Image (tube, rainbow, N blue to C red; front, top):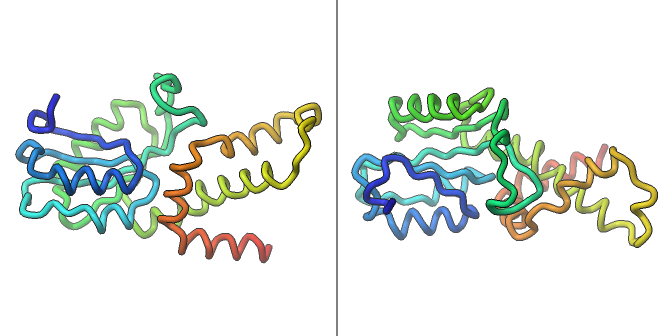
Length: 192
């Protein structure tokens, strides 16, 4: 369906591409459309999305807390969202009825707890629960160069380092887009 026929549009792109797509195409969206993203940083996206003179459009920041180390359709799973957390970052501009509709859809999709939080709290918490673990996992993998290492690993190493195999360009953008929170968390981690 083209944008002009879609009541709800979910953009699953890198954060910068989400901003560019909405800002470039905002005149093409259907009247009163709900637009959501599924990205891992919110302050930058919510701040930089410009709906210009489209007061009818409703952009809702969203973040499903589910994924795996794969990329693309080949990594899809019909159970990926079952019981998973989902974060919404509404602003004063969002319409209550649209938020309620989105929450109903998310519940029907199988998501567990759906939370409404500020974009600022989202980025602070995701810095800790997602971006820091990724950095620590990648640092562990990159800190020891032994081609024979797999003979010495077990479940704990495999699970801890799984996220280091995630999409590096995406994670670079997420971490740099949330650098203030990540640097503060990194300093606390180093101190401990």
